[in-house]
Length: 349
Ligand SMILES: NC(=O)c1ccc[n+]([C@@H]2O[C@H](COP(=O)([O-])OP(=O)(O)OC[C@H]3O[C@@H](n4cnc5c(N)ncnc54)[C@H](OP(=O)(O)O)[C@@H]3O)[C@@H](O)[C@H]2O)c1
Image (cartoon, rainbow, N blue to C red; front, top):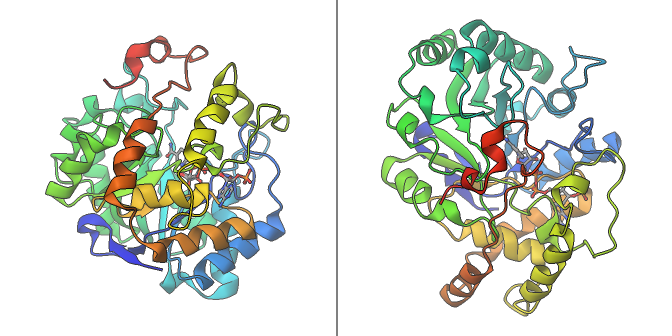
């Protein structure tokens, strides 16, 4: 496993981090996790040299048990049982109070992240993870309109001073990779979590160069396009009831995915053997990226994905070829609650 700097935090994280949205299921989003295997995945991930775990207050949340935070709790169980707290860089997220995912264009920060809400969620996360300090807390949604607001700035500095959190980051809106640059200019944010994969290459235009110039840690989420880039789905794939991927790959998207995956398969050979490897190495070929965080809840995935790190960057020739495989889509259209997300214009041009 290779390690990279997480921007200006001074932390070194394994290039392959562990995404945990699906680790303990997530009502109406992810189903099918086997919690015993999920726990084993955490052990295996660290055994393979992984040291960067990304979770969130909301992962696994259910209205029936609003006090529970299943993904954080399972990670907490692992840390307690294994005694590995000191070996792991822990990142979690504060959920928006108004429950808008991602942030709507007209939202005020006082609706999403009032100061007492930020403080309460940090305390909840400390409790569920069973730790005294969290290395990185990220705002789970963000809008650059909030760059000049004072409340969040004061609150995060107060929380850092209290010793509960070491660094703050933002997890930005899907398909809007520049919707954070004014906020980064404040100097208070150490990391950005963003969608980046072979299909969504837009972040290479502004976000990556900005982050490199300004030493911002970049955490690449959804690297496998929710499993699409892993190449397992066929035109006949049926997603389990309650699994959001039925919507994500709805309409004609599944058919188009299969056509595109067949084209990508032609690029495999001796130098890159599998599609997940191609997808992860594509992202890690950019120096500006600190870590890629594939969601992992199966042992075979942990082993395959952690092994990718030592295989190095892709050739310049292959990177040039992969540019042609970009596929910008708006997952939120046509069912988005926020009208601005329904339009093609929601996707950054
Ligand atoms: N707004 C936000 O802040 C936000 C949003 C999304 C995600 N995230 C974070 O980013 C992480 C990654 O995103 P994601 O999990 O949504 O998407 P992803 O990493 O693109 O896809 C994860 C899924 O791909 C499949 N997979 C993983 N490794 C595989 C392999 N080697 N071979 C075949 N299939 C494989 C697994 O499906 P099965 O488990 O079904 O087999 C896994 O659940 C999340 O876990 C979360 O930590 C943050």
